[in-house]
Length: 386
Ligand SMILES: *Cc1c(COP(=O)(O)O)cnc(C)c1O
Image 1 (cartoon, rainbow, N blue to C red):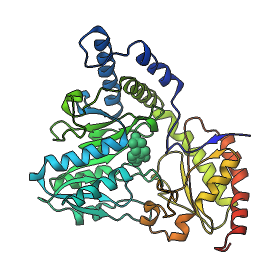
Image 2: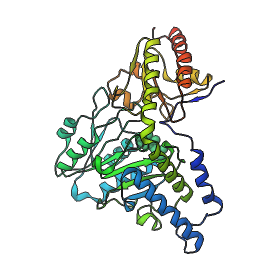
Image 3: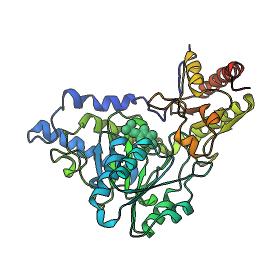
Image 4: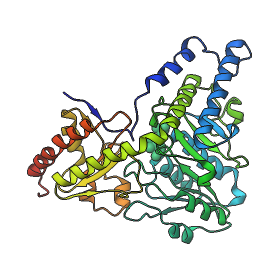
């Protein structure tokens, strides 16, 4: 049976070149990067060279990169420590209704602690409209605006440059969760005008458990994990040097691919989208039709359950995901799909197909062969109608 992994927004395989780059740092150059001896010095050198490569991918300076355990930790550190450290700048946080839970739940946690929170609505494409932010922001009160660069479920790319400019006009700083964009499309912190940015290695063919927070020079974030003085006192804990080396190699490879990968992925996505719409009635595209992540196809099928589609696809070796499957295993539809205005019934039938660098036209054709009969059969069995 064919095996088609088409869930790259969830995670990606480690590139063999990344794995090769990491290996020596487990067995030969295993020193603690804080140790004084030559093992430690070698690890330290690898750490700092890696920092340069990761910084280069997003146009940052090396001393603006703090390595974390991933995107989730970077989001938590950015939001929690900025708000705690800058109480003089205000008590108000603004985020959006379609954020990853790493941002949304973090903001809600702060709201329980007494910070004021505004969750901005999005339009039907999942975009935060600049005017919505303009109306919500309060000079003197709003300290932080956190809006994701691109959404992991529906692929929509947000107008970050405009949103960050609005935040700055009002005296607030701007954080973006760029976990879905770094390595997929050009991301430059200066061009976007962001002060804080989160990234994660395992979404760009790097290892799991390593990511980074970019903090622009002068932006007063603080330590989130307390302990030793690693990462310039901003992230305690023995540094995951093999992970960092893998992240850097993945960043280097992503940078080389950046110009060449977008068009083929967009072509594959178009072929897949067109094929789905031609073969399956009562289907709608979720997310923006153009301003979206390359290789991301997200759709909703009326009268079916996303979970059932996933199980049936998996029987054919196709590994995808659905917005309706929430981590708790509850049957609540995705907060993102509800935020773009889909009714519950429609949001339940969502399917997300996210392509990566190794997906081919044959993969797409195989999905187009398997998916339509699956939907047809599920609809025939559905109590919801046809
Ligand atoms: C995957 C993801 C995260 C979480 O990153 P981890 O490294 O897995 O903690 C955060 N935000 C977005 C948008 C993501 O897609």
